[in-house]
Length: 241
Image (tube, rainbow, N blue to C red; front, side, top):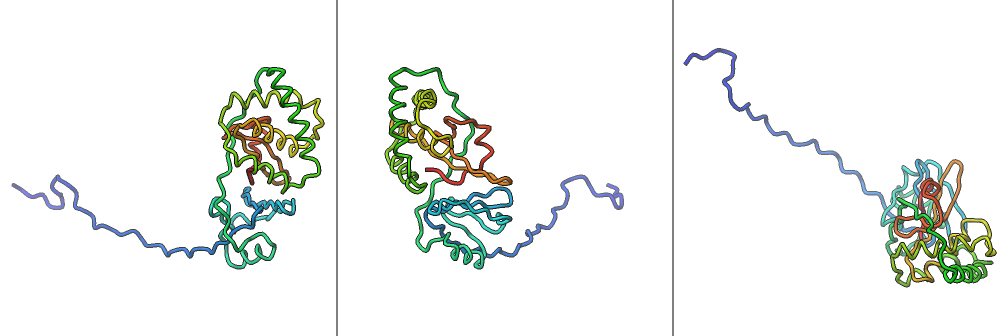
């Protein structure tokens, strides 16, 4: 057999020497701190919005999204020590660990109101709206949240047909009930009505920036109730009760 110089015989190519991946230097772990009860954060683009329930106030932290990192489902934050110290001085953190917060529900659809419900269901919704109006009056935001969370301690059933029936009745009687026009009262009363009917529901707060605006609505799972998905999807959830 004649060997032709500089030509390799057919067959498997020679194995290349295995290369170990370059080892990157380990990133130092940032220290963590717990948020104070009633303090909630939302990351909106490059900014962070803070909701301080006790103060009933929103704070916009411009350009802070890259400096703070959420941990424990929003129950705490990780950042450089100087930043954590600034948060502590502002009264936004706590030395005691709060129970892990549940994940905020993300809306993916909206329930369309059904055909008019029975007069009995409408009458029940009307009287519930009357009592809800008086319960809402002169209550602070912390008191409204406490009442909503107290109702949520009772297990509710996930029955979308029943939710549609009750929400439709609530919408029908709304022009005759002594409502105020803001979303806070309307959504709180709808949430209260659904929970009193034994139905599962969340009272969700959301924010947007530039211009800043806050909104709240009712959700059952990922379904918006009594509001539109187009409107709600423009807000980043910051808190749910």
